[in-house]
Amino acid sequence: MTATAMCIQESPLDPAAAVYDVTLPAGEPWLHEIRKGQTLRIVDVEGNQAADIIFYNRHDTAEHYSVSNTILGQGGIYLTTGSVLRSNEGRPLLTIVADTCGRHDTVGGACAAESNTVRYALAKKFMHSCRDNYLQAIQNSDAGLDKADIVPNINFFMNVPVTADGQLTFADGVSGPGKYVELRAEMDVWALLSNCPQLNNPCNAYNPTPVRLLIWD
Image: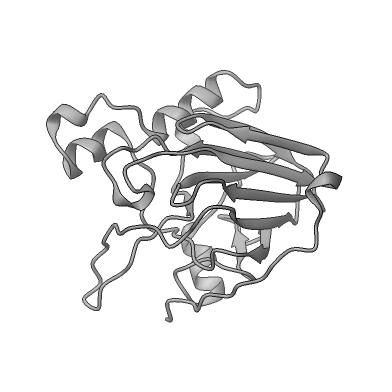
């Protein structure tokens, strides 16, 4: 299995023609429907931010993003242009159709009270985390999701190199201001996103910043 080479691809889509355009502050959650055929762009506004996201079948939330099926399907561990995000049933949820960053993580997981304690210090347990964001978004929606539906996620713009002996490391980001990734929905999906609030990880240069979210029909 390869690591998957970076594949830089710019998009022809014009932000002025987007049907949805919002800037999400650092540390905030977002839950939104993306209809089949629509395109979602996530913009790393200031650079080195991490956007943690899970996708679900809009009509059957028991079907959700699968790290293992996605990695096996493409034969590599990083996501970039051409990557097909597959569900736990093996079906395509979305396809990455443009990417000016070139590499995204899907093995590092989302920060939580437990991981903050293990990775950093016992005193960090109560810091704001991506899992908290997921729970907040679910509780304030009628998407039919609950905490049992929180599964391993994608970390767009996050840099998690895998060493030669198979260890994971958390490194300074490979993204930059204005870099973006764009995904075309292959079915109606829910997108559950946490704009990471993590202050202890070099992936966002210890400085969480906004992301911009645009959708085209």
